[in-house]
Amino acid sequence: MDRRQFVRIGVAAGAAGATGAQAAPAAAGKHAGGILDAGVREQQQMMEAGKLTSHALTSQYLARIRTIDKAGPRINAIIEINPEALKIALEMDRERHLKRVRGPLHGIPVLLKDNIATGDRMSTTAGSLALSNVRAARDAHVAAQLRAAGAVIIGKTNLSEWANMRSTHSVSGWSARGGLTLNPYSLDRNCSGSSSGSGAAIAAGLATLAVGTETDGSIVSPASICGLVGIKPTLGLVSRSGIIPIAHSQDTAGPMARSVADAALMLAAICGVDPKDPITREGAGKGGDYLASLRTGGLEGARIGVARNFFGENDAVDAVIEKALAELRAQGAVLIDTELPNANKYGDSETEVMLYEFKADLAAYLKEYAPNASVANMADIIAFNQKHRQQELPYFGQEQMERAQQKGGLDTPAYREALANNHRYARAEGIDRVMREHRLDALVAPTGGPAWLTDFVNGDRFTGSFSSPAAVAGYPHITVPAGYVHGLPVGLSFVGAAYSDAALIRMAYSYEQATLHRRAPQFPPSVSLAVR
Image 1 (cartoon, one colour):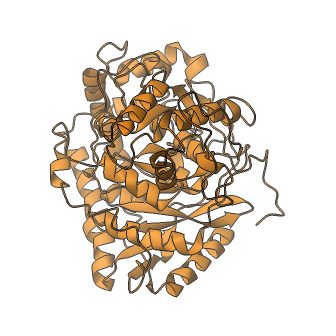
Image 2 (image 1 turned 90 degrees about the vertical axis):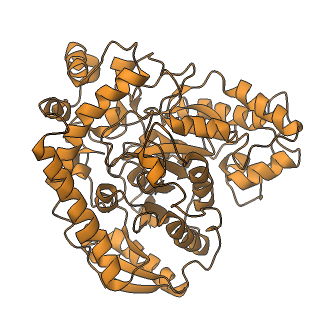
């Protein structure tokens, strides 16, 4: 079974807080939600001008979470609030007052997916009751990088439990600990996953930025479905240490944001060498200058391959993407119709690799980051779920975990053969081959279909996905809002060769600035079929 078949109000609420003035809307008329829907640069400009403080901004986001996430439409994107958020914000304000601004994210509120370890008073659980109230021994490298950059971690987001690697019949965005996250663009529809809460939260303006994680599609799919920019970086640019794993050969964290600029700022903050993750030494300095890529004109002369074998799943989505292709041409890109070769030759082997690595990597994570947990390995978690099946298994089972438990170690020949197959057909005879033959700078295709109705009887219903090639190869992938189908967002994907992250950001930014498709959600109970 293919991985994507089983993976997977505009109200400015609250007072500004005691330490700062009321936060006036930035760029009036541009952001429906005022300062809470604004980007990093606008929020920083207001703080630099003394019109806003980090404490005020954090207070307003926390109030909006109470208004939108826990009441009103109750999108349920946040699994836990950081009890130290306001204290951290005050410290960032104090440092700013002393002219000690750490960088572009200083004082900016961010959310982390609840599979990213934080060595604080919050739990890190992957949505599982087996890790409820378990505090990590220390920060994941990503969390530490954000703290060093001055970001204010205000909470954790809900996710598909165990990052959607528990069942072949799962419902994305549901976890036993967090419940179901709703799609802000249609509350009866799914957010996709597994970074469901990160997608819904940023779409709804519950923080400025969020971190998601991806093994195959778990950043780009919910980003596309929630009308966001999502970046899955080249494997090795961002450390994997301290992130509850599925598969080290594909896992990476990445930004989810309302703009390419915001996503690039976050990527610059979280990437870097981590002594605990050797692969980051391979990626040191190779990703390019993400911030320098934030300039228009980046599509002029770019040779872009249109991966036609990833069209045809949904006529309405294809129509949206054809308009996007016309815009790429208008911006000076040279488009070459092509097909991505061998994309059907690693579905089964990808799953095999995940099963082997999930078993091994999860035990290693629990030993290092959750030594006090009541579970120490995959077998323990399976037994816990059986014992608490009314809470953990009411809608779908744990077949994937059971399959993983049956696998041998990472020295097993079958594992090594599957991994070699993945790299052969996704890299050398896949993305690398088509880009070399046509001298391409990037590939584009629809990220996937629009959001489907959440269905606990039949499970997820994906309609197309362009996530697997870059995920299996470990190559960069960026999705950008491209338009809407019946009011539901659709994303355009840019995929490139290893370490072409900065080039993809340049192309994605130029497309975004020329189109500006993103609209804030209005939390309708369902889709109006009169809206296209």
